[in-house]
Each structure stands twice: as structure tokens, then as C-alpha cells.
Length: 143
Length: 143
DNA sequence: TATATTTAAGAATAAGGAGTCTTAATTCTT
DNA sequence: AAGAATTAAGACTCCTTATTCTTAAATATA
Ligand code: FES
Ligand code: FES
Image 1: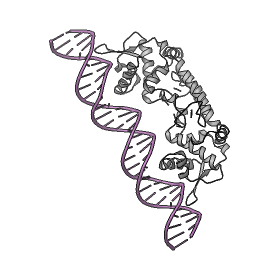
Image 2 (image 1 turned 180 degrees about the horizontal axis):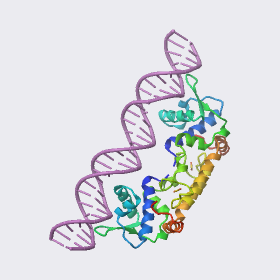
Image 3 (image 1 turned 30 degrees about the horizontal axis):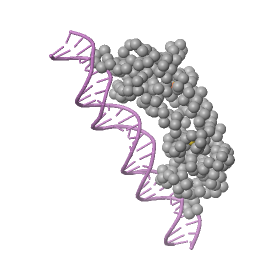
Image 4 (image 1 turned 90 degrees about the vertical axis):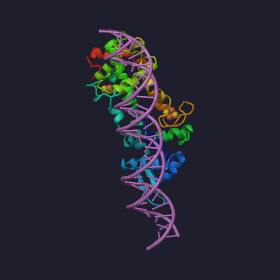
């Protein structure tokens, strides 16, 4: 459902929130190391997050990225939209051209509910909540 | 979420149910034409449905496929499993190695509910129900 | 039995996403 | 001012999936 780029971006945002919140600047290189992933791949996705206004970036020594908003103001759906787009929430599960209550496919009325629930979950879950939960449950943010 | 092969397979099964139920043999060529899709691509996916025991196939003139079970006994999840597999329902939304209540990621507890709901929907929705609904609502099965 | 029709199987090709690398631009530090 | 560190941008390769095609096997029908 989410692309690998999107999954990794969410994990990166979680790490950035955990490690620096909206204050500290964190080098992308550090994020890649902690997430045990490719710097190249992560850096490319981080660029999209910057363009989407979720991160500020700073070049040069001591450069890196930091949250562009408060952790409670960045929702999962913002990250998904920046990386994968919202196509998933707008298109038919069976691949028909239109997807609306007016032009439903065979399972539109059933699927629509589930999809809305997922959208709601992504829209209401903030980075602050996730990181808070993880710290509370003693889950390693990077696994 | 579903591959294009899976979407098309579901549509094909809906058409086969609508046009022939469990009795009549329908050529794959006819299905491809009605669904306005590639015969080659559809035929390959139909083979998987045959191997999965959802369809019987018959070679030669007057050959084709028909449902291997009653329409009320074929669930959406069976088609999804045959074409895409159940990986979606077993793997972490953020791409972590394990996905279980014992080893949850940052959003496992939230996501798990949604995923179960989708699985339930796919498990409880039969071809008979879909085709019945469509006929009741006067929706064209092939769009 | 010969022919036409249809599925079966797998090879071949195209397209798209994933992942890597190179070069440029910026900025801190000395 | 020079050099090092870091992001920005885009080209490039690789891999998986999607899609098409070719050949083989089976079977109904004349
Ligand atoms: S029309 Fe198919 S899910 Fe909406
Ligand atoms: S561990 Fe991430 S969704 Fe289950």
C-alpha cells in the first residue's frame, strides 16, 4: 500500500522528531545510519519532504534538516501525500475509471468505509503522538 | 494496494459469475472482450485462479472456464490470495522485519485494526453477494 | 483423422519504481 | 580565501512487475 520510499520517509521523520524535535538540525547522513538504509535513497526522499514544507534544510557543515512545524502539527497523511500522493484514497479498488458514491463499482460501498477509516487514522496521527507512544512503550524508534 | 493483475482478476470473476455462475463455461476471450482488456494478460492471471482451485478450465472448442465452487463460497480474499498473496496482511506498514503485537512498530496498534477490518471485509464478501448487489443496483458488472 | 479452437506454459519485451552515483551549489571553519 | 561538509538536482543502472507473444497440448466437430 505504501511505497518503500514512503515507509522509509515515515521512519525518517520519526527519527528526526525523536532525535531533534523541531529544534536541532540533524544531518541526513546520521538518519540514514540510524535507520540502516541507503543515504542516497533517503536523501532523495528527504528532498521531497523539504519541498512539501515538512522539513527545513541547511547546507554546509553543521547542516542537515529539522522539522518545519511542531511535531503535533505534522500528520502521517502529510508524509504520505508528499511521497506517494493521495491516489490510493481517490481511486477505485478494482481499477475502474471513476470512484464515487454516484458511480460505485461492485464493492465501492464496502471499501469506501475502510478507506475513509485509514485516511482518518493517517490524518489524526501526528509525529508527536507516535514518538510519545514509542517512548512510553520503550520501543526503539529505529527498530 | 491490489496489483492491477488482482483488480482485473476480481473483475473477471465477477463477470464469470454474472454471465455463467457455476454452470456455464465461458471462454477467456469473451471475458477479455467484455472487460475491454488484454486477452494475454487476463489469460495468464486466469491460470493462477485455476491453479488456486477457484476455476475449472476446459481446452478446445467450446472450452473456457467456469467457477469451481458456488458463488457464495468464493470470497474476495480467495482471489486476492491467489493473485497477490496475503503479504499485505502480514507485513509491517513501515517496513520493519517483524509485525506482531509482541514486536509492534510505531503505528502497529493503530494499523492492525484497520488491516483486520479489511481482511474481514475481503473474507466475508462473496462473489454471490457482489453480483447480487450489482444486479439489484443495476450497476453494469463490467462498467 | 484433420482442422479449428481453446487453454497451458514459458520466453521475450516494455515500463516503472528502486536504488546509486556524479556534479553543482551552499555555507561553515580555519 | 581555501577547504571541508552538507544538501540539491539530475542522470544512470538495476530489478521487479506488467504486458505481449510464441509454441505446445488438449479437445470438439466435421
Ligand atoms: S468505484 Fe470501486 S472502490 Fe469506488
Ligand atoms: S509492526 Fe508495523 S504495522 Fe505491525
